[in-house]
Length: 196
Image (cartoon, rainbow, N blue to C red; front, side):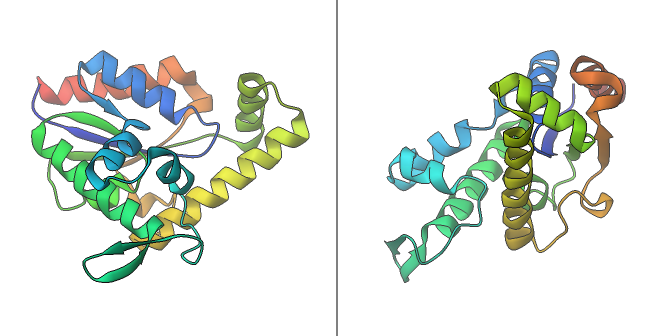
């Protein structure tokens, strides 16, 4: 298979993480999601727990700042910059699947990148979160709205592009149509066909 870096943006509850993970397994390539926080902690020397607070969140720059060569910098900005460097390094190493973190934007100048955005209707996403997290309907709906809002703010703040809009991605897929396995089969079949 020729090198391909697949970036996956996703609405909360759409199954984007699971789809990305299974797609990576199927294609036999590395998968990065929460691992990006661990790698950023190693690279920056900042505690992983602190970085996790700012993971895929725009963050309030007045909450916590860190010293850098140019003075005080918001920790959320430092995390984005560090994760962006890591994403570029991982893409230079070879094929992989990268979840979130504006991966499509960070790697937009590369020709070996294919960006996917995974979505699903609100009711489907709320149901998935209710079942996965054993939450009430009201709590699941509030969680979906909150995480979507955080991801939207993060993406739009750092990329300057609209989150979930077709202009930002090569493909937008509704995971409720084929389910997680069917969506993985659809994507993997496409990547396997073009790399033969």
